Image (tube, rainbow, N blue to C red; front, side, top):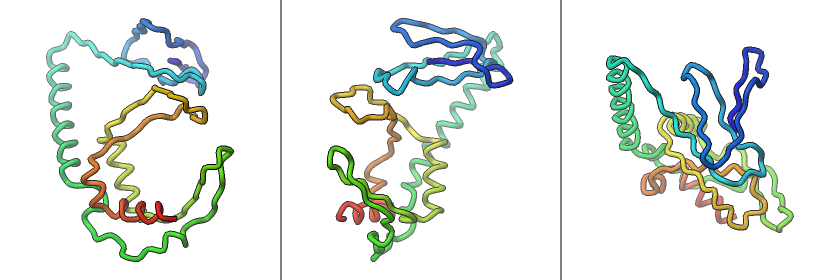
Length: 175
């Protein structure tokens, strides 16, 4: 679902996803792409294309993309968050567990507080928001308890397993 809001945050226009549909609008118009409902299980492709008659704007945009690509590569090359300091040797993961539940299907749900350093989490959030690579899986192969939130942020696994975050997650898995 593509919704258009006015200055009072009222919906003034919308477009429902349909195979082969194309929606075109002036780039200064704000928009918010969303699935039409939680039950909508198919993938959507939003192809954002900008046109300009100005060669100067085009070249400036190109230079910005090149600079952003270099910045992203430098961020990825610097290693995963938390790989710059040693992992905690004896963190008591069980001490951080605040509750335990069981799903209707009998699966364990464990809730932990303060397992990770705030600094690591802040760095990870900033990295993913600025440089994250996201994937979407709309295969919905028998996943009856999905909330249709199927976005996955990807990162290099070899860098991750060198981090403090991995060390802590391994300990959580043994509970």
